[in-house]
Length: 132
Image 1 (cartoon, rainbow, N blue to C red):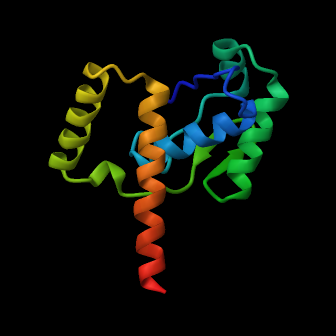
Image 2 (image 1 turned 45 degrees about the vertical axis):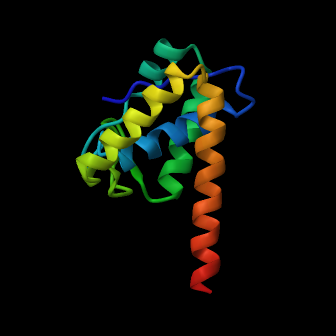
């Protein structure tokens, strides 16, 4: 089962963090169709967020067709999002190796995230422009 981690200092709304973490779990194959999400009460107990915040996130996921609420039973995953879990192991190994080297080189989490985000944007923008 997924465990949500809320970063109150990130500037990202709490419900958005829950939605993003759920989508990431779907992309990585950590959640699959049929899996039950934690109840709002379980999320509240683990993260100390308002129950309405959890419900708002679950409604957003439901609106996107990713989950379905079943009255009295819980909220269940309806579909997966991607193929990241099926990514060839060498790619995962290379990325993990790069992360270890970046960390050993003195880069912090935010530095690494900024670099990855920048290169991701650059690479996919160039590819999309080439396709047009």
